[in-house]
Length: 389
Ligand code: SAH
Image (cartoon, rainbow, N blue to C red; front, side):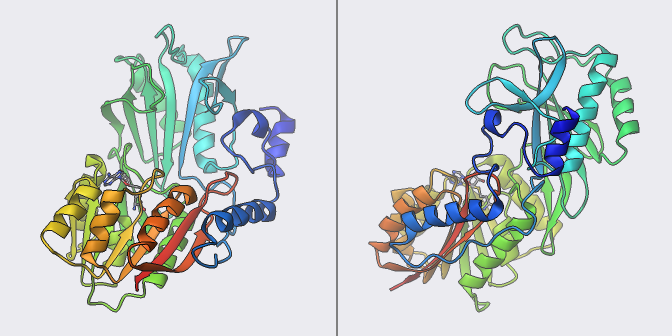
């Protein structure tokens, strides 16, 4: 980056905002970003209930705990690292992103600068030559731990030991390094093969008083500061009394369910992704949480089975992916007759669709609270409370 670009970053102006495409509203003042998102949520969801003001982030920069850099050669055959231009395989060269944890970007720049002295080349997807494809870094906000995943496009990593020594000498703050092999022509960052080169192969981080394990492939909310704000809001609106049995649907590594387990009698988590499910079980053990039970299954299928067995629960907390939930899930959920549904959504459009369905089936919306989990981008998270009429 040029000195001028570095100064832009210091002034919280992204020098590549127009070419990168990762952020849609980064060029606007934070208040303006919020105002746009607020209007958008109101347009989509205002028909169900009044929308609370968005819960904003106090410091809306450098919040991401997961950063991925891609390596390539520029036209002058100089190694660059940065972010894929949205929708393309063109790398936008950048030393520092306004969303990334600053420690992560410093390590990425060091790795890029080390490549030449190790005669290492970035991997070229078309010719399948070269070595380094991506570096993915995950940081624990509270633990301070750092995991570096070196994604290589070859099964051999020449001078690996020397490279590792140089990296750890320069960045003793790194907790663990994992090598991941990805030789496929794909837009997926991580391949199937993994080898721990240093440390434990995972990091841990804390949300409230619970410790969670984060492996290279685990899903973990990318904005840990706002994740606590979001979960606290969900706990507040749910207003549990302590004797409830609840379902945590689409539970990921079990974060919501485990945190809510202190407020209820029993939590039943369901998650489709096998790695996330395994992490959830580990996390429950690690924290000594005894009243949480995880199931590895499709959430809709699981709800249908519960409905068929005429089982009931007091509340359902659901946090589906961007595509939202399904008619099958919703039909089964309403026949289980939970008194409360807490719907956490990262996509107000599919949330609108699903709320239309749920509110036709005997439930009413009691509150809608957006939480800004993704400053700089046009994404927004929303917590909705529904109760049985
Ligand atoms: N509640 C978690 C994860 C939310 S992300 C958290 O706050 O961290 C959505 C999760 O839904 C992902 O872990 C994804 O693997 C899972 N998922 C996607 N489709 C699913 C399905 N059909 N059934 C169950 N889980 C699913």
